[in-house]
Length: 282
Image (cartoon, rainbow, N blue to C red; front, side, top):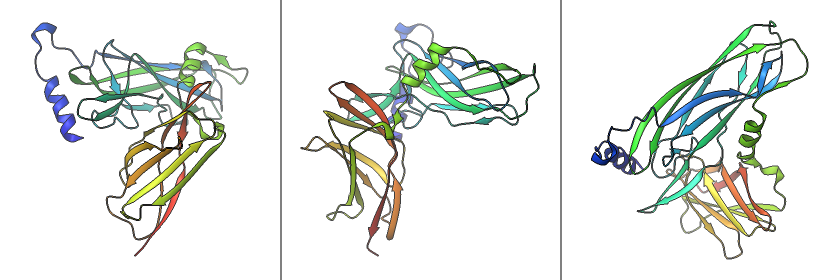
């Protein structure tokens, strides 16, 4: 992975005489911070969105796992004292297969990343609350450039009352691109086993009733490390994980990622977060 990244960055450092001025990684992606509320009330649950507008023909990398090369997109949101801010929730990325069996997970065009927030129980009406976003990325086409940007947003506090929506279409679009909760997937069955031929390997089997095709995008997991996802003859999926250091005795771990399920009515994406147990010999 480091070798592939070094190659990408070295390519990005070469001047292309046909391109004119050297592209600026800070300008190839434009950052905005948006709210689904025009004003906020005490104790209200609401959502903020980081909107990353990636220049046409370029892409950035999934914040959960860039794949075999690239750098994760990083977003940090800060708010006023007393506000609870959740972690960044990225949309489902695109899977790109490149030469040399390199697979990356990327975003193109308009990328909407959501942050759930909760206002404190006490807010002074008319007071303005400031939220600040900082972002960094690697933006690539045939060349790659590092970039960073900032955005801020002020929201006015209002007395308790009805919600005051804003940007409704944009937030509806953003939520539609998030993985669904796995509880919404019916007919799911999973299993796990240790590979008796190689005790450092751990396999997870997945099947879903009515599925025509299954796919899997792993989040970054260092130990055990994700190795591959293989379709079984029965139409299921087998995930292979490998321990860098084989555990002794009982071992518990999760294999989070996004499960893609294609049926006769279309394709849906689900956040897969099952936890597994294995008992290894001492």
